Length: 126
Length: 126
DNA sequence: CTTTGTACCATTACACCACACGGTACATAT
DNA sequence: ATATGTACCGTGTGGTGTAATGGTACAAAG
Image (cartoon, rainbow over all chains, first blue to last red; front, side, top):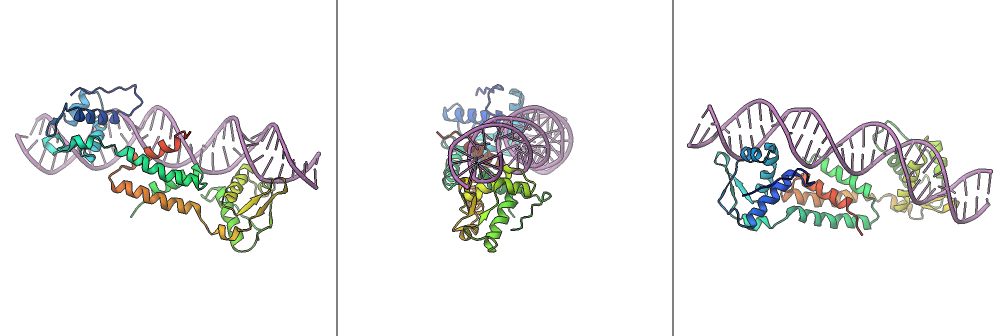
């Protein structure tokens, strides 16, 4: 598995990592059950901070592309191929765009939309 | 019409203005057809910048609480009483909250939601 | 004693936005 | 002349987010 991280690229490093691992899964370069490099090992190889790699792994596990097994390491998820085709962020953007567009059509100012959004995100839901 | 602006209050000045004018309408202190002070006049009386008052008037007109008539001045809208009870921002927050809550239940990170939101708001829709 | 994922503490740099301020200008009317 | 709403240019302050860095620590297993 050849992973190339471009520091000059505007795409965040953790996002580049996620993209390349999903791509490797889709191209069959890594198959379900295969072990992945440990977080610290990969961080060392790519000259990245371990927290950056950990962030990528955490999101990949959320998407069921990989599966962490504690001290035993991290492995490619059984349904990795199917789940690598799903782009959760794209779905979020589409749904959110519908909502925002409706607001704008109702005469709501962009500034007001931002304020409302900030209020919701910072609200302590208890 | 007695308008009191509190600079110490955390509520934005233009929002205080909007609130007090809507309140005056609901309490019947000003009635449909009544003239309002000009933007410059009110700004001078309250020691506010004219742009701050203009912002409040612009939003009040969008909500059909007041009606600007160019050089003739600004007047209370015929449907001002009914429209003063409507809180557009509250409606926006409720709708937006539903959308965000759905995202969170799907495992989407708050960070990802913010990124998607920023992408939409900054997108040039042409 | 080392390695695994994970969870805290933290700081730095960068970027964006709301709010309020100031100045200038315009057409339209009295 | 004076006043109306409105539009454009701008500045500054304060708040807050992401991204990425670093350090420390834990339980579990080899």
